[in-house]
Amino acid sequence: MKHTFARRSLLKGLGASIALPFLESLHPGSVYAASKPQHFPQRFACLFMPNGAYPSAWTPKETGPDYALSPILQPLSSIRGKVNVLSGLMNKNSISKFDGHYTKTANFLTSMPITRTVDAKVNAGGTSLDQIMAQHIGQDTLFPSLQYGIDRIRSGVDLAVGFTRLYGGTISWADAATPCPREIEPRLAFDRLFRNHIPGKKPLPPDPHKKSVLDLVQADAKQLERKLGIEDQNKLGEYLEAVRSVEKRITAPKNLKDFEANITADVRQELKSMDLRIDEWAEYSQGVDVTEKVRLMIDIMVLAFWSDASRVATFMFGNSVSQRNFSFLEGVHDAHHSVSHHNKDPRMLDQYIKITRWHIEQYTYMLERLDSIKEGDGTLLDSSMVLFGSGLSDGDRHSPYDLPIVLGGSGGHKLHTGQHLQYESKTPLSNLYRTMLNAMDIPVESFADSERSFSELLV
Image (cartoon, rainbow, N blue to C red):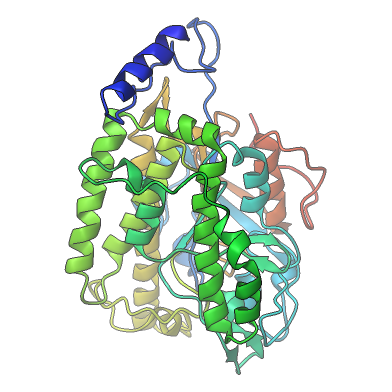
């Protein structure tokens, strides 16, 4: 360890911020004998898709390891050995006689009932899965969790169902009444994590002796918030959350030091490339094709996991009732929500399937990126659990049954992978969440309406 400390001091003494590459034999907490098992941080990500999926084109016909991928799931072929497709799961507490979407979005990771409201006093029933994980595995990183998306949170009331649209814009909850703010711009998301570590860019370090900005503005912020509309309250909340994250970097020097130690030469080169990609995207992002924006956000999450800036992340492809225009896909002419109400019209079904498959292609992109990064004898994907899903099944019926769910990665070799598991109809989705918490050694006897852990998934 003395050798590691001296080498890092020399690099800093030269005025450079380039850290050592990851060396297993010198890394704190690493193993010194090849005969001992390797341990790396566990990570979790959730990618949420609105508007469901058409079951006949989604669900594989066979079960077990020798199943054939369905038409929608075909993009997973390159990584199928490291994913599980899970069928038969439902979120019982998403059933509502009033609503088809909002109560199937906000509680996707809480599995709890949603309180019907038309204002900002929202309640999703409890703390979401990602935030429970962040409380246990996120405290040693700069950012306990990351929440990303590509759509702005919408305010106001959906008069068709009498629910506030705020429920349609978040799946991550610090507690039942506190949604976690989302970042939707790649430049802001990237700079927030890595601005001070991009080669060739002057860092802007905050003054460590300055009194907390939040302490100084707290009273004024509360007074101002009372005068704002719901949309501006959300913007203010996102701003204060960004400030809070910066201050956390100041007050947790150990976390910052550990993070800097993970900014290897490879990571630094990737940061430089990402910085250029974001600039190019911002300059040429006219039009409706969101593929590059989505992949930028995915790559930022991958970089956060790789550098250990964070170990928990959620991403929303769109808000509830998303009417995103997917005409950038060949053969698609209508909006996402519209084609989800296909009424079995072949023309609408074809578009619905193509849009859902595009989502799986982006999910596959993230899995492949994680699997391309070596970590010990395995890869970053091997240390992760990456969930993909939607809060409803067939969008035409707003069905809460047999949700489209895929889980990639083994969470540090804690889960079996490479199979299609068909569960009995109406099996609680929360059983899977309880299983994932068990795989992280997080002590829970239950989660929401869970009945058991999936012992067949656990190694």
